[in-house]
Length: 199
Image 1 (tube, rainbow, N blue to C red):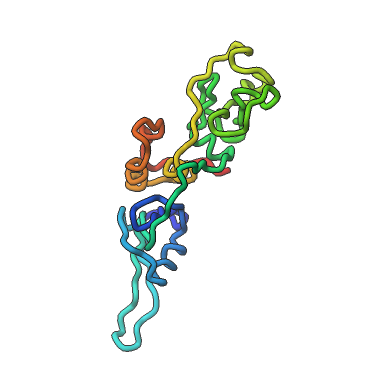
Image 2 (image 1 turned 120 degrees about the horizontal axis):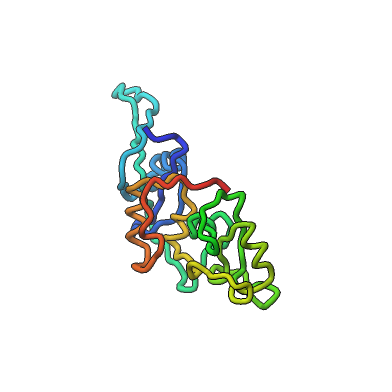
């Protein structure tokens, strides 16, 4: 049985991924009759009170994915907020200079074109770097520092961003999210049940 901390993926009625919620929030949506449909694997069965007339106990089954009524429209210009946690997730906790994996605490945000040289603090100009590589690069561009960038930075789409925010993403949730990723998304190759590092 999954841990009670397992996140539930909430979508709108059209299937657009919206956010991660707790099982308690999912139960509340069921209780308020806000669920349009459910999909994914059943995770929990919650038992409520006993009906005085029928003498039956109420139950709510919580699935890994719940769709709520209504449709959510994203602006074409939508760019998700940038944080170190989601940046490190985007780059799979890999230093994009030396190519090694590191724990969250040993990573930093590097500006490919440094702020001091007019670079901006946005997704297309930031990569994950280990502290050593970031210190070596300092206020230089990769070319100036004689360092090779292993991947091109990119801004994640909304669905990719929802994935990056997740912890312990289940296989069925990953499959659902992957269907919303661009065909060229580097995240497509990742499998389900990623135990994401806490911020």
